[in-house]
Amino acid sequence: MREYLLCLFAAAAVTYLTMPLVRRLATRAGAMAEVRDRDVHARPTPRWGGLGMYAGMLTGLLLASKLPMMRSVFETSAAPVAILSGSLLIVLLGLADDKWSLDAPTKFAGQALAAGVMAWQGIQIVWLPIGGTLVLDPLTSIVLTVLVVVFTVNAVNFVDGLDGLAGGIVAIAAVAFFVYAFLLSVEFGFQRATLATLLCALLAGICLGFLPHNMYPA
Image 1 (cartoon, rainbow, N blue to C red):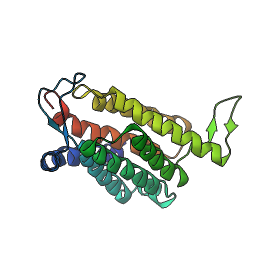
Image 2: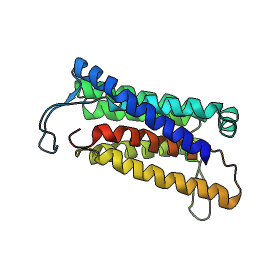
Image 3: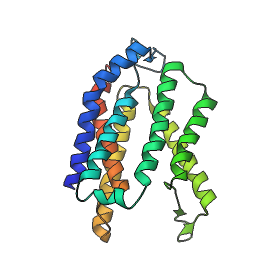
Image 4: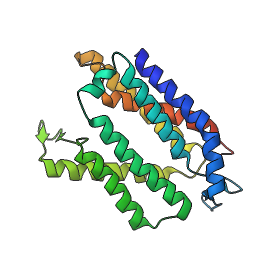
């Protein structure tokens, strides 16, 4: 638990400290959220917050790879690389969208590509709790994983509109999943160091580091 919390706080700290630089970069690049009817801000607001959050996640993963317990996550699987490559594509897509307001088909294609890159490297839904345990074939696993990731990305996008709303919801969800995954490992005697639990901790951390900059007025 201590190593998870250390990674969480490291990710939160780096995200929080990086945001002023990200704000200046976004302002200079003209990546600004203009005032819309569905928003509450009264003046254009800098975007590109995902850049700082990605820096926080990178820091958390790097720290985790050096810790005694968490090191095993990186030694036994290439899944962290899959997560980093898929999320990097999402970040780049977000930066471009914030700057040039990409059309829906382009954003959908970019999201599907990012999810596909991640799924192709092994981050997949491989079974479903249907009729006991329904094991999926490789192609179905990849397609279903891409659909779930794209659905989740757009669900969060559609929630966004109030300062702190999307970040707050994701932070709460990440904490809930972290607690569930950790307690599951404890109750059933699984390996305590798991990528799923670590990612939940890092996701909670980067959201908590971002929220002070995103609360009204963002």
